[in-house]
Structures are given as C-alpha cells and as structure tokens.
Image 1 (tube, rainbow, N blue to C red):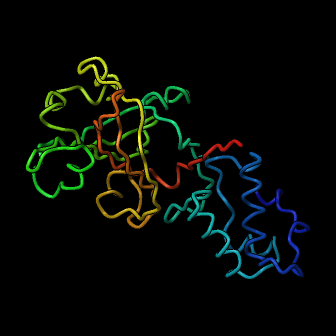
Image 2 (cartoon, rainbow, N blue to C red):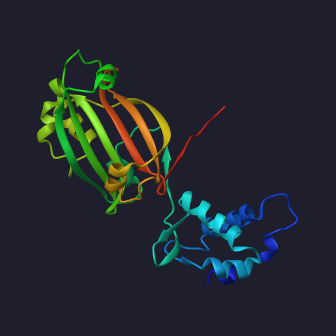
Length: 251
C-alpha cells in the first residue's frame, strides 16, 4: 500500500524548502525507486493530508506538479495513478522510430493520417530542402505507436520531384528510412534539430490521445544524406508524459 511507504520524517516543516516540494520529491523518489509501480493508484488528497500532516492545498500542489511532469496521471472520476516511466531519448543520435523501438524491445507501429502534394505556405520547407520557387513538396502526416500506444505525431516534407513514389509506399509497415535506402538509394546520415517545449493544440491532442494544452516536446529537424543534401524536413511532436530527452557531454 502507498500509505505504508510514507515516512513523515522525510518532511521537515522547519526547512526553507516548501513543504509541497518536499512531498513532491518524496513521491517522485518512491516512483523512481520502483516502490510505486506504474498503474498503482495514489491515495486521495484527504488521505495524503492525514498521513503527511499538511493542508489539502499543499498536497494538491504537489500532486498537480507531478501530473504536469508526467510522473502521475489523473482519470476523471477514478483518481490519480502512477504513470509509465518515460522513454529516454538521446538528442545526438539519428535513427528511425522503428529502429529505436526495436532496440527497446517494443513493437513499433505507424498510421498514415494524411499524405498530399502541397504548394502553398511552404516557403520555410523550400528553404530547408533547397527547393525552387513554386516547387511542390510531398507532405506526410504519420502517427507513431509503441506497443499500440500513440507516442509521436510526425509531419514530414519531401521534394515531390525527387520522392513522389513515397505517395504510394507502405509507410505503415515499413521503416521510412529503410524505404529511402532500398527504393531511392538515399542514406539518411545526419540531421540538424531544434527542440522546443510546446502545448498540444486540439489537433495534436486528438492525434496523441492527450488533453488539449498538455505538454509536448516539439522537434523540428532537417535530415541530410551522405552528400550533405537535405532530404526531409520534419516536425515531430513527442508526448511530454512519455518522453524525456538527454544529452551526453564529454570533455
């Protein structure tokens, strides 16, 4: 039981550190240590108030922040539960979603939500892909799954002149990078990416199965081949409750 794991000696009410923050970090430690397992229900605010000996407002703030950070999640009418651990995503590594999930021992899946040729409002895409003025791009929207759970929503652009055959490719059962290599002889070798914190709009939220306004990690990138020629402009939305990015630095 969760209540049995609460040790009020971990909470120092005389400390300058806010009590809600101490409770929040204590609960986070229990989750990271595996004492609180994914899917386990957290006691009600009233029960936590009694156990920690604090006000309901203090407990509510601690729980709310853990929910925002994806450590816990709420189900309306049912309560608050421990979330699945976030996937560690390296920043400086170029691999397809399928390859990444395979390494994690998870089943990758994809669903093509839209694919079309676009001409308007793509000046930024033309610059990124070195397309000529007025040249069309092939826009592909795909939802990526891990073990059946929607994880990433991708919006990719390619030169239609060069990659028009992607319009008929099996993007739901084959890795996009494998298709580029096997059918086009193009080898994605490098990428330049930027990461931004964002809030899911109604469309992104509906794709990922999250609430509108929920945090997402937006990654915008350009992928290059072995000749340093840009081949893909992509905007990816990672669920903030399922992903965390890390960077390894060496001196």
